[in-house]
Length: 355
Image (cartoon, rainbow, N blue to C red; front, side, top):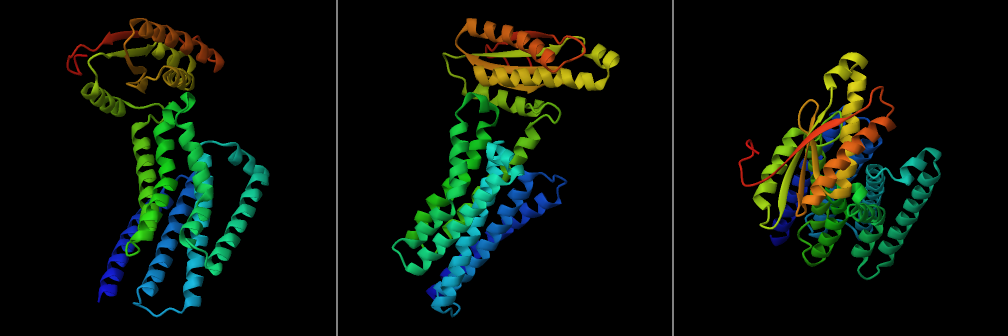
């Protein structure tokens, strides 16, 4: 009776995992996006779903709910970890694409891709050897070997998240890293609590977290410039005011592109879009350097929130914004010089609209 109860619990948790993965994969495949990243992200979800099914069948045999010979159980175990290795490989490709790494750029030449595929076959061979050799802690060893590609790429993403040049995407990189970290933590838990499918649940939760973060990023970004939009800015301001410390100073800098209507009228909307992109790019670069939050506030208006204790620093940032916007416009070969007008005000406890 206890085996039946545990098997039912195992099945319910596995069913929830399949439901989550099915919804996410359906929405990804239904979307119009046909990018390299999207393909591999969807592949991870489908391989995870297949691993959940194989894991559940193995669980039924483990608890004696269905009869399964040892040889059959070994075959299912090998299939399970091969699926894990394949999804780890696809996660590696997705994570590297997110990071715009050299590996993905070399993929067109097939060299790096072939090396990775050879590594996958070596991993599969190691998994089968460990399984049939009955080594101690084989489950943990097989999991770590299977997850090595994902773990490697996720560690790189986590390391990059602390670098200034990746300031804008640091949260995304850290959430991507949870895909490898969370399942490996839960694999240890499953060793001591085998009645719960902790490992496959961990992969599913990690996958759901990354997908949720991707959706939030799409909602919070301005489609044209790639910078934060007005809605994200308003949320950030509200949270920043709540958490501001007594000794800190908080400033808002508002930017307006000079003669923006004239640029659109005289040179056309493409040149107007260039002006918006150049301004946004200069804010993103300086935001990474000086650690401030920037967003597109309105049509040709941008805003930045600076948290600093130095009056000299805010003056330096304002000067650099004006100069960098002009320099960026020149680099983008705009037909007219780009210039911005900006205003700055310190927060003194006023409500947000007044500020």
